[in-house]
Structures are given as C-alpha cells and as structure tokens.
Image (cartoon, rainbow, N blue to C red; front, side):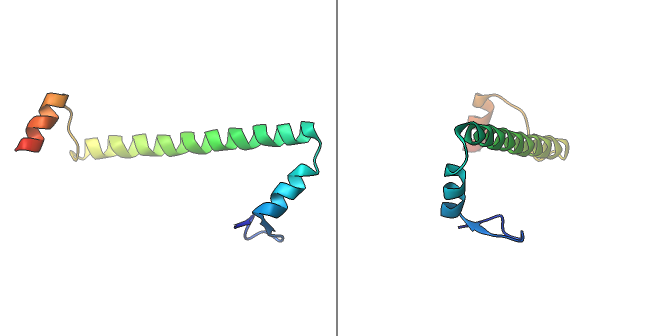
Length: 77
C-alpha cells in the first residue's frame, strides 16, 4: 500500500508507522486527533451527499413515502 501517492515522496504503510513511532507521545496523540477529525469531516461530507441524493431522488419522484405496511403491500404487488 502506498500512501501520499502523487507527492514528491511516497511512503509505504510500514514506513509511515515507523515514522509515527519516532514522534513524541504528545505529537502522536495530536496526529491521532487530527486524523480522527479529518475522518469525521469526510464521513459528514459523505452523509451530506447521500442525504442530498435522497432528497433529489424524492424530488424526481423516484422514491415515495410510506409506512412499513405500505412497503410490504408494494412488495407483494
């Protein structure tokens, strides 16, 4: 696995782990916090995109509302 592809320097996953292990514990904790926040931001962005796509599909009439019973009825038809 190559990380940071496209940059001037590529590092393997193991190289990255080795580099992190040379950092102080405070720096490692800061890095973990930073990565965690970036992951949360990316997940939120993905969720926003999924919600927008669902709203768009609803607006286009591609989905409909209903109860569980309505769904079961539609599946039987």
